[in-house]
Amino acid sequence: MRQATELGVAGVTPILTERVVVALEPGKAEKKSIRRQKIAEEAAKQSHRLSVPKVNAPLDWESALRELAGFDQVVVFWEEEHDRLLSEVLQPEAAHIALVVGPEGGLSGGEIADLKALGAGVASMGEYILRTETAGPIAVALTLYEYARTSRDRR
Image 1 (cartoon, one colour):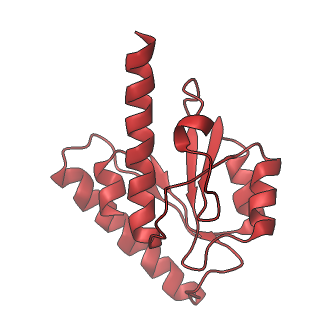
Image 2: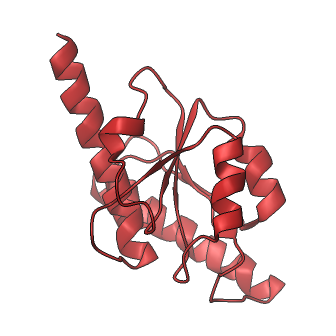
């Protein structure tokens, strides 16, 4: 959460996928969301961000798909994608982008199929299998880099 805030994300929404390892009781989920929001506020203040990302409550899969449908582009980083890089799937003209990284157990083939049906681009992060808390900020950093690179190339 801290690193994503420092990188300037607008919001973070945990998604309850098939392979989510952590199962939270409803009361604990709310406390965890409040804690994450506080971390985001502290990180925004420390990094002199003008806005604090919204930390949303976890969404079930169907609700997440409905939410993702409202974005200009959805990019999924999947450990089983070995060929397509972010530069091949990112649409530079998209202004409102959702980045999806899977849970510790990874996204299932069915979940990837659902995301592709939404028009999501599936990209590789390379050969490494990363923890979710590492993969999220790396996904943001890679996306920022690609946007900077493509905007420079268009000048």
